[in-house]
Image (cartoon, rainbow, N blue to C red; front, side, top):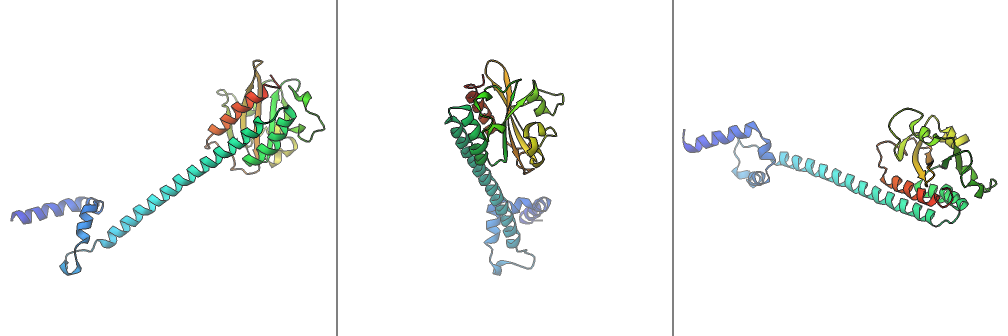
Length: 239
């Protein structure tokens, strides 16, 4: 066997071991595709179709990845803009009644939720004497018993301390927060609040009729920022 025949045998064996080495190598594929039809013999297979299929598959994966990245970036940017608008609206208020109204109307519309509740622990509604009971937004404030905030977040189950933001299907205890609207709520975002030096605890709860609106696998960074902002705003009237 000549050196040329020996080399051909070695190359053939190596290619047969792993054909992807050829198909995935642009230089090798380009050299093969440069062959003209007149130079091909009966024993030469046209790899153009295989190469085109591989290339098309790679392009499709790349396009799918690009679409996913772009969609995620757009969704994140949209969420950030919405949260900025909601927080700016809350920062503009000067009284508790205004805060409750903006929370119930403006913030709910901006974030696309159906119901908002501000829950505060205590025997008396801290600061709520500033809210006229006749005000249509007064029902937004819910007074919870001691430890009511933590119990609502954990569904009264023992476990680690509650996180600042919990996203989930609506709690079985949702009547405590949403009252007669509870039957309409399918998912919720629960924001834990620690207000002032008096260790006053509370919640902001966003309720949605859409069971997929809030889920545990969603990001919480923006809602944590909202909760921390609300804590500081409420200290004007509650702490």
